[in-house]
Image (tube, rainbow, N blue to C red; front, side):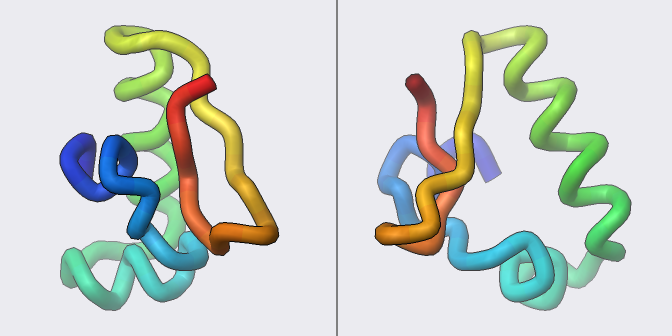
Length: 53
């Protein structure tokens, strides 16, 4: 997931959940954990992806 964020190619939370075979709720948990470990994240609607600030 971190690699997808770095590449800015996660897609929407729902798409990411489907891609990874996890629930959308787990996507939000992982996003929070990654942000705590590696810095702030944001969701870009233009790119339709999470990205590091």
